[in-house]
Length: 578
Image: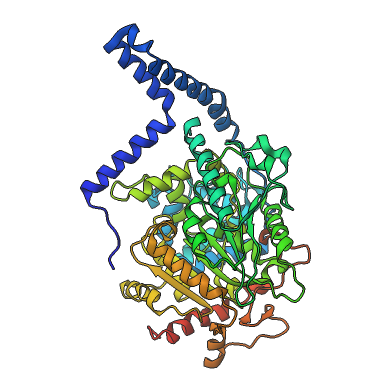
C-alpha cells in the first residue's frame, strides 16, 4: 500500500469546505455583522427588521459578547507560566541528555527543528543554552551557576553530532513550550452547544452498552461548559474528584477487562464504534479527560496528582489481592503520554497484563517533530488531516494543556519500560504529528537506523501479527494521526489486537529471552529490574511513587549496554541486517 495522498483538486475542495465551516461556526459574530451590512444594503431597514434577521443579529450579538467577555480575558490569563515541575538532579539531567543523543539520527536536523527550522548560522551557543535551560532545567533566564554544565552539554553535542555551533547569540528563536506564547483560537457558543449535544449522544450510546457514569462532585457543575447535567443527576461519584469516567462491570472469566485512556477530540464519540464491537461480558473502564475534549473546564492536574487519581479510579474496580483482575491498558494519542508515569506506580503496573498504544506520542518526544508540528507547522494544503489536527491543537484548553502542563521528561517512554508484558504499538505510516519512520524503527529494531527497505518490512506487520511477541509493531501504511481510530481498517486492527490480548489462554514470548539465548546478555538478578512472567519489567520505583523527574532512575538507565545488544538481537531475530 502506498501512503495516502489527496489529489490537488480534492484537497483544495476539502480545504475550502473545512475552513468555511469552521469560520462560520467559530465566528458567528463576524458573520452576523457581515449579514447585517449585506441585508441593509440590499433590503434596507425592512430587511433587517425581519424576524429571521433579528434572530441572526441577536445570536451574533451574544457571540460577540462571549468573545469579548470570555475568550479575550481567558487567552490573556493563560499566557502566565504553569506549575513548576520537580527539578531534575544533575545526574538525571546527564542521563536524559545522553539518552536523547543516543536516539538522534541527524543532530543538525534535531537542533534546527527545535529552532523553528532556522539556519545553523543563526543558532549560536547562547541560543542553545537558553533552550537547554528549558529542556533540562525547566527554567529561563541567565545561566548563572549552570553555565559550566550547559557548556558541557554543548561540547558533547558537537563531539557526538559532528556539528560546530558558533559562539555568541544568533537570530534563531527556540521552541520552549513553558515560556512561549500560548496560541489558541476562539470557539463559539454554537460550537460548544454542538459539543454538549454530542456529549449527551455519547452518554446515551454508552449506557445502552451497559456502561455506568461516575461523575465528579456536584459542586463542580459550574466548572465545565457545556454544562453536564449528568453531574447533577447521576448517583455514582468518582473516587477522584478531578476525573469522571464510564465503567462497565467485567463478568467474563476467560477474558481480561480493558482500561482506555483517550486522546484529543470532542470526547469519547469517536470511540463508540470500537467500544460497541467489544464482547458484552468484557469490562471496560474509560477515563475522561475533559481538558482535551473541546470543553471549557479546569486545567489538567499536575502529573503526580493526575496519575494518582487514575490509579485510585482503577483501584476502585480492579483491586483483587491475587491479581486475577489484571487488565489490558489501551491508550490513544494524548492518553499514551500518561503511560510512563502510570507504569512507574507498582499498584498500577502490577495489574497491567498488556498494553495497546494507538497513535503513539510518548516515544522519542525529545525529537522536535511532535512539538513543532503541533505548535509551529502550518497545515499543508495536500493534507486535509493537518487542518483537523491544527483545529484541535488551537483549542483554548488543549493549547494551554500542551504548552503549560506538558513536561517531556515526565512523559517520555522508553521501550525497556514495556518489558515484562505484551505490547503492541498501532500507528499510521503517514502520521503527521510524529516522526513516524523514527518511531517505527525504534519500536521494531530498538534504534533509528532505518531505510526504505525497512518501511516495506513494517508494512507486512499487520499480516504477521499474532499477539505472541513481547513488543510488536502494527504499521498501518498510509494512515495519518487519529485515522487508526476513525478509519475502518484502523478500528479493525485495534479490535483484533485488544480482543487477542483480552484472552487469558494465549501464551507469548519475551524478546529478552531471545537475547539470553544468543548470549552476551546478563540474566536477571536481584539487582536487575523487577521480575515478571514475561521477562524483566521496570526498575524499582520509590515507595512514595514520585514522577520520573523526582526519583533516581539509575537502575533503568544503566541497562544501556543490554539495550544496545537488544537492538542487535532484534534485527538478527527478524532476519534483517544482522
